[in-house]
Length: 126
Image 1 (cartoon, rainbow, N blue to C red):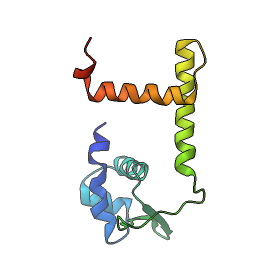
Image 2 (image 1 turned 120 degrees about the vertical axis):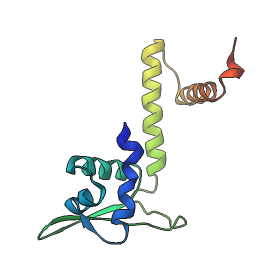
Image 3 (image 1 turned 45 degrees about the horizontal axis):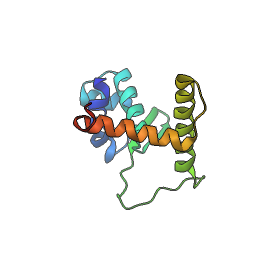
Image 4 (image 1 turned 60 degrees about the horizontal axis):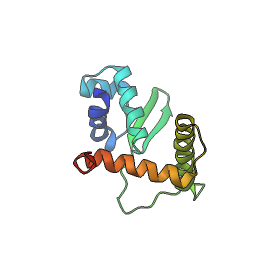
């Protein structure tokens, strides 16, 4: 859990010049396993970390892009597809718990209700 909190400390280290894991470990005083975990977490969060292979091993470089630059994807509907998949998973879970069929719209509305209840618990006191 602590890894998520501190994972982005590697980004300034590899921003200006590519570095190997050993160089990053030496700079930050962390183990190789921890640095591998930090790189994975940063990639999962959407940071673009490029790995290049050289004779001495792999080097990692953080590609910092401007905020206004649009990312390109092979499938332009990637967000809709991801949302649809998550909605279907929520719908299936609710159908298993409730024991009857519900529509995707009902699943979305129920999810929004739960989020609202979590964000504003004082409005839902009975």
